[in-house]
Image 1 (cartoon, one colour):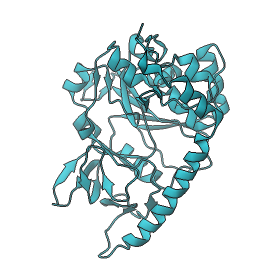
Image 2 (cartoon, rainbow, N blue to C red; image 1 turned 180 degrees about the vertical axis):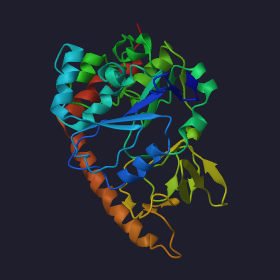
Image 3 (cartoon, one colour; image 1 turned 180 degrees about the horizontal axis):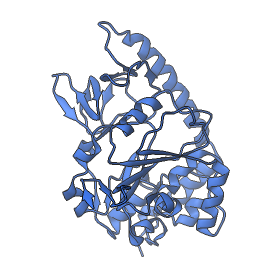
Length: 340
């Protein structure tokens, strides 16, 4: 076999991907920024991406390393029920965040030939993945990144079943509780915080069954409650530049910071890109081929403020639900107890 860092080519000429990343997505249509994400997937040809969806993808050009899988949320729920042996409570796509750690088993047919599998969010743009996922990193750890926007798992029986392990931590729900309750547990990452219920990243920090790695300087996770771009590790970015698989954040001193990806959490981005073969610039909150001499940031800020108020109102309404109160009560004093 011929080898590269993340692919193998068999004697029959078949490409075997070392890493396969999944992102189920359901709805009426892909977000307006999806073409930018898709372009960044194409520019990482040594990584395989699988997107199960109910959205028509027949008009999207074929990309060798991107596989769309036609399915539906009810069909996926049925598949989950068969995997679990009991009925999961899934009435909206958002609930799937709690099932992400099961993907190594749930989507085994797509990842069985890969050494690594993982999941990623749709509100990302990737840079050069191979630049960050080095041989040393992949050889040294079993779970890479812990915050849920992008998380990778070594493809073996122990790691693929971490979601179903009994951690015996009062603050970490067992998976049957997670799967059968309407509430969102953020189980794929750290959970909601102290005495609010913890997730698998917290559980593995407390019970280190595998070698877990994280470094928030690798990626630009943008603070959602600010109009301007500030990463969660405190770096202020004036704009991002993406071109041919390379992503960099540019700060106020014009220093360039290379990133594995940028995460536009809870931001409605406008896509004004007309040519994906040219550099793409990202400013609050737009994708552009060329930055105008003058951008009406006041207008953009006004639009963003309205959107944030709408999101906040929606969040308050969801927090008035019985499932939210049940979760808060269930874990209210969970971290005041001694672990068994």
